[in-house]
Length: 503
Image (cartoon, rainbow, N blue to C red):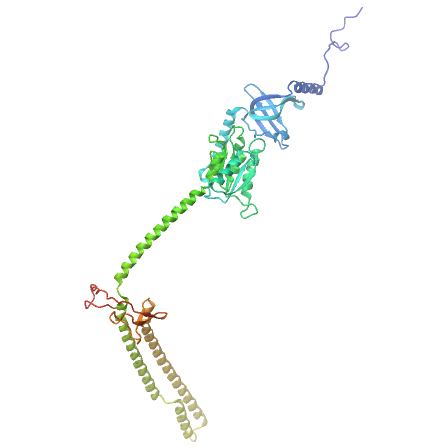
């Protein structure tokens, strides 16, 4: 018989069972395989939270809804191809595979693609980003620059294929042909935003006068599409590149009803790419017509102004009178004054000469003084000692020197005074000369006998005369002469008639 006295489950007899035994690592591997086989590819919708970009380039985050949380990871190679920039609070749909991380006994989704969950989420993200960039001042009106009236070079950032670039080039050729530089970029999908931002920065980096001309105006263009298709133009990197552009920029993204964030940062928004070309340049035919019209108006204005000035000049000429009569009185007074000046100068010089002669007669000649002193010396030499004689000679020499210096100074002073008065009289004579009247534009008329012709009566028709101007003489023949009506006397003039003094 079998002894059943041993207690149940004692160490001497293990409990019988049929469950396999696993180590922790083995169980983790089995669970990982089960998850990956059962959920090889899934799409999970949730809100991003705890987003972190590791220095290795991998992305770590959690997806959550009202009741649960799911860890997620996106490897570096996949993260570069996501097509959007994940942020906390974004509602997304992630496609990937479910796996386990044995090191922490956690399951997670390895994300292969990520997209925003619906248009509502896109619009919410777009509005939040717009408000944040607006608060930074990137959309401020004072940042916007005026477009050049007629740019020499236009840079276009768009896809090199498609209808957009053809429409822009065609419209520019119709309105006003300009030189166009195209920077080809992808306008949607992975890496499109970075290419667009690099193109804007690349055009701005061109140096004026370099091998590649720097554009005067930029156009960033794309055709129409859905909100997702146009999303590259809502990316922050594109908006900041447009706001930082030193070259004026026109955004022409989508159709008239489409609005992207680059529209707020650009200097001008065009409803379509074709409209951007119309805003970039004026119509050449209209400019030519305007220039021709302005030229006609300018010519008509100049002709009218010339006619008015000619009429005014003719009226002033009629009121001026005959310049020869104006010169008659001053010319005669000038002749009289010049003659009187010459007489006065001669009289003044004669008086100075007589004064100098009188002064000279009263001053003994130095040689005579020396001779007298020598005679006195010889007479007194016998009765004087040598020392007093030498003293007397020294004093005599000093007297002679002082007398000579005084005489020379008096002669020089009298000559200087006479020269100064002569120069003043000559200047006065020159200012009263009729040559000064000729310098003001008048002419002196003389007949063949070199006599002045001072009236119409003395100017017989056919008479040969000589006209003297300030810079020379020329010959002329008198035509028909006519007498001017007598000029009324001006109020306040003494004598009641005749030409007044101009000097």
